[in-house]
Length: 280
Length: 105
Length: 148
Image 1 (cartoon, helix red, strand yellow):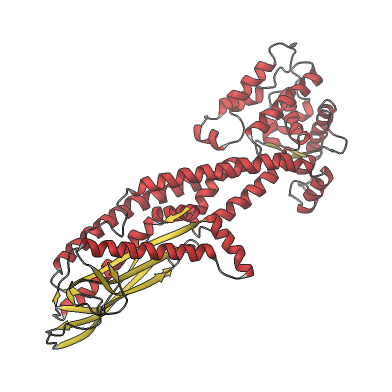
Image 2 (cartoon, rainbow over the protein chains, first blue to last red):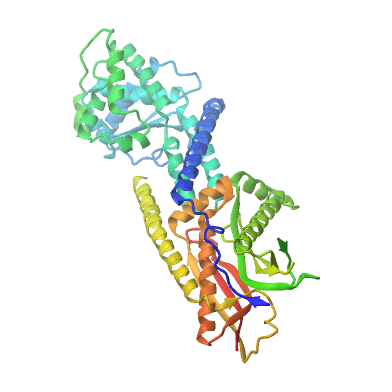
């Protein structure tokens, strides 16, 4: 009996393929999978979420009790601004044919944030920081009408429904991989579409807002002025544009200008003195 | 190729011992099957997809061990052993090893 | 969001570059030492050669813990979603097993043995890669070293 150890060739137990090749194939499959999940559930949410009655939506907000519902008490000066926003809101709402059951609540937040948003239960929040950027009333009316349009089309509940279902689906897939790295990757891929309203919804709200402005003022001049001001101030970034859901300012401005081509022109309304003083 | 987990093949003589040969593989089932297995855990019973996974992995490990044995000119692998460990949940890691030998005709 | 993405991409990139470099170096070193210890024979057969006069026999063993890099972890996680062979773990285990056998051989060479019989391998996962931990495997190779 002879004893010897022979040299075993390499590559039987280990794949000799370049790891990046397999990785890119897997990554591509994951992008397709996440894309399919997001698109599928978004379509489902768009159909199913508006079936939730509006009063149920209001209940959800009351029970979760977000902090802007019990905002800090406003000073007399700021109260006046809030009253002004409410009046403008109702004036616009009158032109927008909101369903019977819907109620609109305008909130004013005394904070530096350059932001305004619409959320569940017909609540619209406008921050002082945004008001300060406003060149005139028409620009503000455009933003408010845009947020009212979101509520009219039930966008907040659609977005929440989509966020919830997509989040659950991705967590289910990510959770079973037992790898935080993969979970993180799935989150990053999924978050682009989950965060807030989709681009389609934003464009829909813009179009509706322009109609409301036309009905209220008889023209849409100045509607794009806020976007122009913000656009000039910030560096446009391709990456942010990909992750952000608001259509790029340029495209919004172009859409608004397109709309105003064949309609009557007019001059913009300045803010009342008291509002200007309180905001600045 | 003769595979055995005893030292000798009855009626045959070992001419040359060639040393250890090994085959290993790590395999996973897709997430859908993992999720279904998770549900199955509530009711108990055989997890068919995992049985299948381990069978496939074991066959692959043996196949790789045989390829190693063939590549060094052996015609039998004796004293074959299996070992398994779980590197990550949902993936099966199978390892087969034995002594490659040349049997006399 | 962007910060998360940046950290994530950095980790993946670092994992890939360093992990691949380390793996290449390790395989080179394994091949070199395997060649060096070629004279020491290793078998999983249980009985010593009948005609061998043995002066000393002793249990020898070698152990190693090898961890996976961030890139491979991600690749394995992706593979877990779609199913199939997890190649990134396969190379990890191959490295660990061969390294453990080499360390066992080093111990046998130190005592002047010519042959190791009844070699067995044990694999265990120290961390299963749960949570934020990185997956690592421990391999222990052991056998009986024989000396003329």
